Amino acid sequence: QREKWLKQKGDKNQLEYTKQLPNLDKIEIDNSISPNGCSWQSNSSSSSDAANIKVIGWNAERGTHWDKFYTMIQEKVELQKPMVILLNEMDVGMARSGNVHTVRQLAIQLGMNAYGVEFLELTRGTQEEQEATK
Image (cartoon, rainbow, N blue to C red; front, side):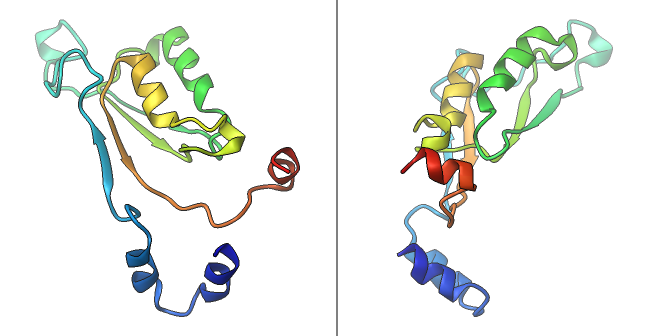
């Protein structure tokens, strides 16, 4: 299947191919993790900061460093108590990241809800990842 898809890249029919993949164009939402549900709460007790939203971001580098982000959030004051976390290169079920749902695992660790947009990895990864999953 992967080889077939790689041969089709750039042929202007990507929207048709996308329709063939279940859930590729869906957003995953899990509002069951946060004890506060979906309510927005200020990051600060100061009334002047009540309208601020703290947003932080992390690139997990092909899913391999997602777990380091939790530690950084706990240790660095400037990263603590975010309301929104923007993540990219997170994995779901990839050998390189322990076959776990990395967004959900991080959300559980932080007690936050999770929203994810799917991405399809069409390669077997880097040479190192290929060797590790033989």
